[in-house]
Image 1 (cartoon, one colour):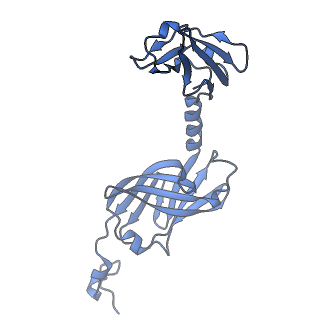
Image 2 (cartoon, helix red, strand yellow):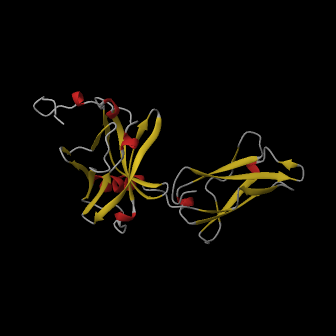
Image 3 (tube, one colour):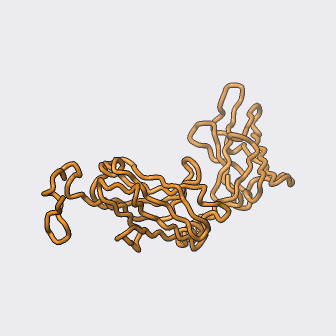
Length: 255
């Protein structure tokens, strides 16, 4: 039950030695104590029975839920009938979530994060990581700069976390995990996938999520973008003769 929140209810069950008692709503009342204060009758004097189940419900006002400990004492004036709260007579409330504040906090954090990608002959101002199918990036990795203008859990050293780039491959989730390096103000990760890791990537532009992984299954999305895979013209195994290689002027290279 939420603290100080309208449109909530308290359920009770009436019973005697023979089982559930139906049709007793007019004889059932309830006293309520909020945070240990004196008991008083509920605003909803008599409950409403749910069908003919022997279970009844009191409608509570917002003021009747304005406490951390709500102690109910339901009773029936019918001889031999006992009434108890479902599931209990004492309820401890929780503060309602401020969804607007949470949404604003998430927006503030995400708006302070930018991703850029650097590689020889490649610079992208948008959140797009572009690779060529079958290329080996272990010797020439793509640097992904994580420009944190705002805060991502300011007490956390991001070098203790991992950058995850995830997208869909052939209908199933797939992605790459990269350790975050650098220091505050200069965080980055290096995409250094090998030939064996890129050769089976599906060609195309795939919607991707860029996420910080603090621990296993504990992630925070810092950006949405694209993971683009360009098709290679030929498989490296096809380039077997001198005729396959030409210099920049279109002339065959000599041995």
